[in-house]
Image 1 (tube, rainbow, N blue to C red):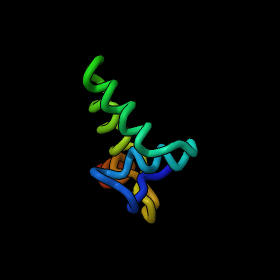
Image 2: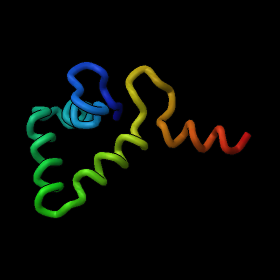
Image 3: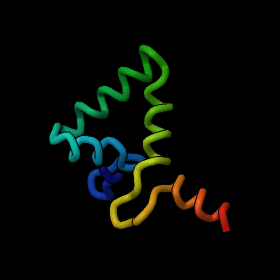
Amino acid sequence: MLRRRDGRMLAGVCVGLAAYFAVDVNLVRLAFGVFTVFWGFGALIYLLAWVVLPEEGESSSILESFVSKRRL
């Protein structure tokens, strides 16, 4: 599962999830919006996915890069 570069609006999380699960990206965006508006944790899930999922063309995620730099 990767954050995609093509079709992204912010960080590519929704496009990456839609490609992975083979669903329309607008459904994924709608789901994040609903979770944010009604339960308040959609934005938190999006931010966590942004940090954990590696970007297309990268070998590691933002979190993995941060942790590996801290170990050196």
